[in-house]
Length: 153
Image: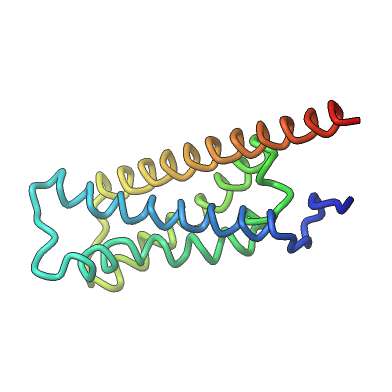
C-alpha cells in the first residue's frame, strides 16, 4: 500500500486531484467573466471565447502561478479542507491584486474601486467555495475508502 499524502507524490489520485482543481479554477474565472458581462447587460461580442479569455486571463494567470508556488495544488491538501481553504485564501490575496494591476495595464485604464472590491470578493468567494466543496468530497471519499478497507479485514 502506498502513501499518497506526501506533498511530492504524483500518484494517479494526486494528479487527478490537481487536474480537477485546476479545471474547476478555470471554470471559476470563466464564470466570473461571463457573469460580469451579463450583469452589466453586455454581450460577449462577436468572438465570445476571445472576450472571455481577455476578461478572465488577467486574474487567472497570476492565480495559477501563485496557487502553484504557494502549494494550493499539493496532493496532500485535497483531503484537508481547512488547510486547502487557508492556502487558497493566501494565494488569492497574492494573485487578486496582481490580477487587478495586470488588467489595468492591459486595458490602459485605472482600476475603479467598486470593480476592484467586486472582482476580489467574488473570485475569492468562488475559489474558496469551490475548494472547500472539493476538499470535503475528497475527504469523505477517503474516509469511506478507509472504512471499506477496515470492513474487508
